[in-house]
Length: 630
Image 1 (cartoon, rainbow, N blue to C red):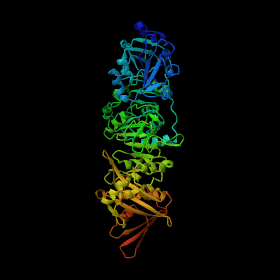
Image 2: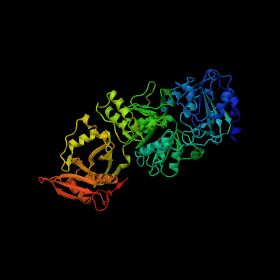
Image 3: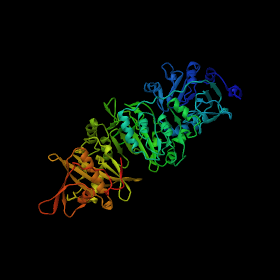
Image 4: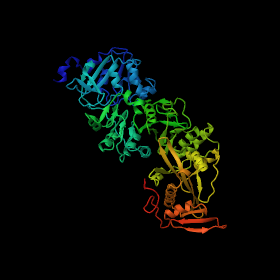
């Protein structure tokens, strides 16, 4: 039996439905691409009898005529999240903004602290069981339907039938308004160069088997573009768009390794193309849940390797994140950022990430700021922030002091703003008075993964300005070589020489390992170029507990590979006769060179020229470990 016959008494026109609404009521409108546009138009066209009504919702993609000038006496909008269609009204004082975590909005509704009098929603046609699906948006719509006094549904045959906690019995709906129309789509814009680089760096933090949360915009899209080579990724998020669909179709997102609800892409809503809406229709791989479920930090934390990727408008030098205000004016909302940042932080091996371009206004404004301007709002506190990523690098702030945080963030700011940011940090006493600003762009592309002789993995990467404290500890604990006396660690306020690295004339390469407790420094190898000879003097320091496991060989070979690639002639080192570590490493690596005794007989001068020398790391015949992957 057609639903029109079965529920004929509930079927009305939009005009008739609107006339059922009484004045001075709070009216909820469905979210995102699930906005019932026909009912919204009817609310304005046929709601002349309405006065002093409040309209509430999350971001919507459709029209918002109730915030137009002249609607003040009839409607006042309160945004749970400010979208483009209501931003001007909020900023001009014609509408309100409620700062609230997305995970908590359903509780506000169910407890009637935010009492929903009327819910305007969009649904599929009823099935043979008398159930409709909420389609593309379950998020807070589920709670609104469950708690509203009056529920009016636009029945649209173009709404996909989504699975999960998306079904509503028609008996719960008071009035059905049949009207078919296309759902609004969210166009996917090609990421710019900065977004692509941010995406590449964020993707480097995503291991195989990770579970992803991503938001809306060019940076999440750019991250997803970089993940085509990963395996068995999962999704637990408040929303996803076409990029996640493409990875699922490509077999990259399978959910097999998810520790909670394996095999399911869990979300509260989707926004994107018509192809996406068709793809989620009756798709058993995708499970829609309310935002009190998807955004619950305790639920999020149940996922091992939870990677939460969220954007921001600005970050200050202490790590505070502004995400709902721009230039002192309300711009968007809290949304689910804090929910997922906190949930991922409590996940086993989880990584909470804030990703943003380094500049705004075509490069005229730094998004890394000494301090926020008056009126700026902190969405994510400095205590919650772990990773911050721009196109210039990754700053790991967790467990770092204000001085370390400030220098890490200055190092990933646009180079044009680093001196200004450092001056701001000095004025606030965040850093040493003689601290130098990072002078070069960090060469992330030089990072490599390798294995020691026992197969354990290590990372070989250039040193950053934020490594100064770890390097001082290594110098104090490690065995020095080769013939260069171990130098006592420099006072903290004099370690800022790392900021002056140009990564050409002077390079410090580190060997580190990472586990659930974080990154640990094991060894370093550095060179400094003599401009007269274009030979690099080399120095190696290895921590005693990893001595003899092949890490020194890996570091030396990688350092020489970099030096050769940058056009240096070779290396030179004065090596003590009773400290043969570097000589042995060079010999085992198969590098030709000359050895000349120095006066006194206790040391030798080693010179190695690069001409005709290939330096592949982990090549056959060396003890450099089990190989290296870029």
